[in-house]
Amino acid sequence: MSTTITRIAVVAAAATGILAAGCGTTPGTQPVRGQIMGGTQAGATVATALGSVHGICAGAVPGGQLIVKGPSGKLLATTTLHGTLTGQAQIGFLHFSTSVPAGGGPYTIDVVGVSSLVVAASQLAHLRLTCG
Image (cartoon, rainbow, N blue to C red; front, side, top):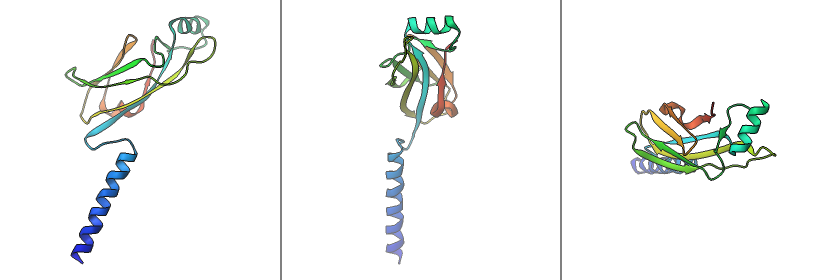
């Protein structure tokens, strides 16, 4: 019976590891996910001038780089912005996803050439970035 219980525990532990891997998390890490309202410089200028949209991050475009730094300024992760800019103004929501070592923060989210923001660890998995 002891062997059976040990085997069940080993199978359960393996299944937990498979489930965690399937969710994109690794033990000791935390996800960094979110979106940014971005667009070309010209598109953001036009949309803002017309008053139709506020908070567009001019220069945040597909393929743009996002950097995550830890409390000491140490580089923890980089990723790229994904999505499509639409319409004549070329604006839209871009998505990003990466992971960093688990910790308490604060973390600096830097959209290269666009904006920089300091956030708490609890905010990393659900970021919604806009610009003023």
